Amino acid sequence: MVVGDVTTGTDVLVIGAGPAGYVAAIRAGQLDLDVTLVEKDAYGGTCLNYGCIPSKALITATDVAHDAATAEEMGVHADPEIDLGEMMTWKDGVVDQLTGGVEKLCKANGVSLLEGTARFAGENTARVSHSGEGQGSESLEFEHAVIATGSRPIEIPNFDFGDGPVLDSRQALALESVPDSLVVVGAGYIGMELASVFAKLGTDVTVIEMLDSILPGYDDDLKRPVKGRATDLGIEFEFGYTASEWHERDGDDGIRVVAEPADNAAADGGGEASHASEQESGETASGAEAVEDERLELEAEKVLVAVGRQPVSDTLDLEEAGVETDDAGFVETDSRARTNLEHIFAVGDVAGEPMLAHKGSAEGQVAAEVIAGEPAAIDYQAMPAAVFTDPEIGTVGMTESEAAEAGFEPVTGQFPFRASGRALTTGDSDGFVKVVADEESGYLLGASIVGPEASELIAELGLAIELGATLEDVAATVHTHPTLSESVMEAAENALGHAIHTLNR
Image (cartoon, rainbow, N blue to C red):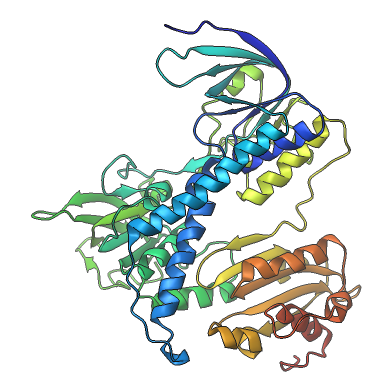
């Protein structure tokens, strides 16, 4: 029996229950608005279910095993046995606890939850199709709507995620056995994080990247320790190449991934598939077979495609509401998260770069507060970013070159973790803390960290920028000894010319 169509009303319709959507819904509920949250898959979205949380769980678990196996210098001799099934069960338990918490928080704040797929049917109307045979659909009349549908992995030609050996990040995080060998297409943050996970599980990993280095968009001095650690783990790189096709190997379950020089792919119109090489034509970093036409053939059990993500905006019938997108499909917004229509908002990945869960959450709060009539706006000046590679990278604010381009006279200070007593006691002393400030006023403009716990340490510097702190403020703040956070204080002191535990430049 098909359930008949009904029409209900709500103050705020939120489409998508990821970190941007559920935060918008909860905050709107706190502000006494009637809120309906529609989710077609799982509460918590990609981040909690298939991305941020499960990947960090596996990063932590594999780090524990790797650290135990490589601690001979500390007098620890161990040969950990990894049970991937138990590891995945633990990871899934973490995910379930968090997603269950999201659902409870929504209900506790008066948010009405609807399972289904929402599409606009007009400026103030949406239709929600419920999953399952005979579940039907319903119409929702809304005063305001928040689009929070997130993003999906980009597919490249000839590498469909539905094919057995071809994986996206979600599938890679749910493998039931450790592959003997893996080709990773793309050396961005997802590709590099998962390459390290599988290398620590014992997989032979080769990364194909169309550019000449890893982690596009990050300064070379931040990438260098990450690349060095990856090489130490046995990860091999093919820069300047793009993956073009794959074939099953005769006689076994493996595949052969074909890659061609990125310049050739671009000339053929294959730019979207491009990924990789600082090697000269015909040379390879990993010893992969180079065929006569300069293509490479890499043998592996699986191939992970991690070349970026694209907005999920094509499922919404945005044209029915009159919401505009850019050429890439991102919904354009202003500083108050509004689209071109004052009563419809967009937050999170679907609203454009940077695609960061915490950025989406901040936008979700702003959208809810603007709907409630509060004077809220988004300020990206102190928006941090982190890469959970080995070692980690954390950044916030401006780089030195960005500060100069903005008209400042930048002064920098740096402190190496090899001079940190706490870093040395952890056995992890690669990397540094770097701060950027305006020389005349001393105001902190930005910071970057590569090294242990960079994702945690960057928060202090984000707060400093948000509060308008100066180098003197940070340097004069007494930090606990011995801690990694002392490196932040020392970097500020170095910029002032009076660091104690490193030479002043």
